[in-house]
Length: 327
Image (tube, rainbow, N blue to C red; front, side):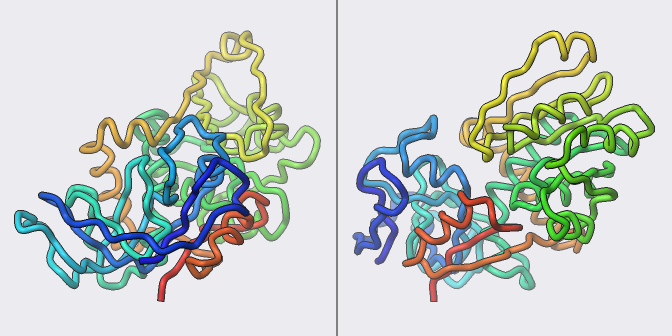
């Protein structure tokens, strides 16, 4: 099989498209021919050795895939060859490949209408976001959620899930096109977070109260205003720092305004509490099947072009999700 292989921690340009051996099945495992694999910002960090997790080299990136079951171990009862499925890897990755072998507990059957590309866009961004909003943020119906970087893959997932949970969404994005996109996907309002004092618009939209939850995968300058847009008793969810700058917080602010700053480390929680994480992903797939939302896949690249796909993510020029596809 062919795969994208990280042979040394280095810029993504040094990833190689190589032949790799197929692994035999162990007890309880399923082999999936990958049709689509999701691409995420942390993939590039791991390749460059900048992530908290340092995978053992050589390493195949990618933790979310969708495809067709080709083989199952003799004791597998949930799946059979020919099933259309979504697959979720652990920190070991393996998704940027033509096939993957995983325990059956990491496999999900797909609804007939769901495309492989859409399914491959679910596990990371929707898994992260539902964990953030549900388990960490304790989001309640009717609350206001401010989403930074709202037109990106994780941002749109937050718009979708917050709406599905009954919240009201203010999307923050940098261009008119991106703001329009968030409104099309269910945000009630959209604000330009590149403008000075944009928090004042958020306060106006919430009748001076401020938002209940901030979802921040961006950091940087956006953080500096967003921490001032949160209301009493709010929750500031720290997801990541795609802007490149890790901001600093004056600790008197949470004291004076009575809000919580909450870190969201999904990969550790997912792999340590898989039963709950699986339930969350089953809920996301159920909402997709009910038509509440569908992941937006804005670009797809052949597996061999994984470097270009990763560059499109790290440049922050994309909206929605980017996936790799196999013929």
